[in-house]
Every structure is written in structure tokens, then in C-alpha cells.
Length: 350
Ligand code: PHE
Image (cartoon, rainbow, N blue to C red; front, side):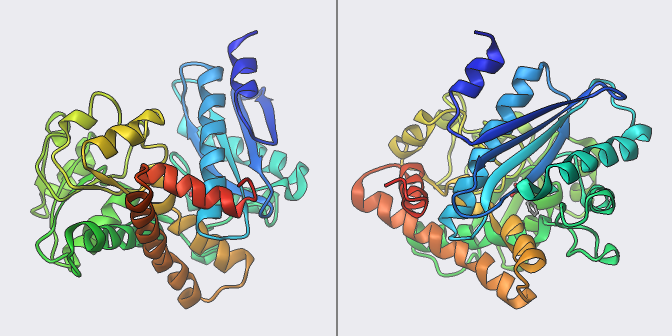
């Protein structure tokens, strides 16, 4: 059995479309994890992978996370995810045609999957997809009839989770003076930094991109070098960049009380949830903290929510985080396990 077969067989989702794009040599991978709660929605990630198997694995894992993200928030959509795995080097000049061909594929699949932006894609890519496949892309720019970037509502959901955790764990009702290290000051992390500062938190950040680092240090924000970030003493560590940052190597170094951030797939493996618990660190599961963007944008564009209604749902993620933290303490289980139980009850799996 080859890698891809093994990965597919080890996955509990519904279907996968694997499409080879001859003109670019890219692969389009569309993973539909579950339509139990509604039609599948998820971001499209565009990047280079070391192998097709790695790209498939990423798509499958991220699609599953979308199912749990929507279920735990009681949102009537199913989980899916797409990956556009491009060869290296990727010519930005070929991007528009590539995205259009990808959009045509989504159009041919009908309402099986509707997408939004993710790592490597943006609202302007969603405009292109929508033009060739009407209805199949959320989060278009405002001048194109969409609700714009999902970054800000995602950041507001993370903020609600951080506030909930500070209340439950630190018995603090405001973020005044709470120290937070934001890992990854991009689209979501950057918006989060501003929200935290407005609330009087003591924020510092880490990043690997020279331009992003310069942007924030020139505004007076303290930069922590990436290799020192995990061991930095703080109240809240907020991963808003890469996947797999919570693992057997990093967890023993953490000097924080709470982990709550926007990155998808923060745990390298399930055992890391137990490692966090054993270290006495309160972890708000990624799929609880980071649902705000997908939920707010999809709610407004597909369910006719007003911006106020969308904001109520984003804030409600704080209640979910609170429930998960309390349930984990009560049942002496990891917060990840608690959130999985909540989601699986909604999915009718328990
Ligand atoms: N990147 C979003 C997520 O992971 C995907 C998304 C954005 C879906 C906007 C719909 C609308 O949740």
C-alpha cells in the first residue's frame, strides 16, 4: 500500500477529489470530511509541499478540523478543506489562471464544497473563483459583493477565547496587564495584537518574516526571537502561525498559564493534549478558538446574518471555551478531549 492509500484509509471522512492541473503541474485536493451538519465549507490553502502525500495529509487533517470547528459552535455547515499544492518555484504571474481553473473545478462539483481563504490565498482569489463558479467562494472583497477578509472576525473569536480562559483560569475579568505572546503577526495575529493592546494587555510577538517583524517593531512592539518564544514567561501564549507548534519538544519549555490562538492543527499529535494537561497549562483547543472567521463570514454570506448577529456568534466562542475548560477540569480530561466530546455529541457520534 502506498502512502496516499494509507493516509486515505486512516481517515474517517466522506470523500476526496484529487485533481491534476496539467498547465501548472499543481494538484487540487478537495477533502469533504463530513456533511452531517450541512454542506461542506472550508478554506483553500495554496503552498508547496515536499510530496503529494504530504499535501493530501494536510488537506484531510484540516478538513476534519473544520467539521469539529462548526460542530462545537453549533453552526449548520459540514467540514471540508482544499489544498492547491503548487510546484516550486511558484510563478505569481500564473496565479490568476491557476485560481480560475481551480474555480472551474469547484463549479463542476456543484454545491459539494464552498471555499474561503486560508494560508496562501486571499479575498481577491475568492473574487476570481466566484466569477467562474458563482456561489462557491466566501469572503470576497467588499467591492466584489463579499464580506471581506476573515482575519478580523477570526481574531475577535480568539480574543473571546483568551478572555474566557483568563476568567476561568486566572480569575481575571479584563485583560488589563495580562501578558500575551502572539506567535505569527500576519493576517489574524496582527489583528489580534491590536485588539489585545486596546484592552490593555502587555503584548509581545514573534515571527519569522523580516517585513512583518519590521512593521511591528517600528510601532514599538517587543519582538521575541523565534527560538526564545516558547520559553518566554507570559500569561498567554497565542499560536497564530504554523501547525504542530505544540509538541513533545516545545511543551516542556512553555512558561505560560494559557495557550489560545488561531493556528489550525496546533497539536502535533493527540498525546500533546495530555502533555499540556500534565504541565498545568490550560489549552483552548484550536478548533474552538479559531472558528470566528469561517462562522461569521459564512453566516453573513450564506445565512443572511446581519453583522451584529455574526458578532454575537463570534463572541459566543468565548462561552464554548469556558464550557470546555470547566468540563475538562470537572471530568479530569484534557481540554482537547472535552471539546471533541462536545463536537461529537452534536455530530450524533456519542
Ligand atoms: N481559513 C478559514 C478557516 O480555517 C476558512 C474560511 C474562511 C471558511 C472564510 C469560510 C469563510 O476556518
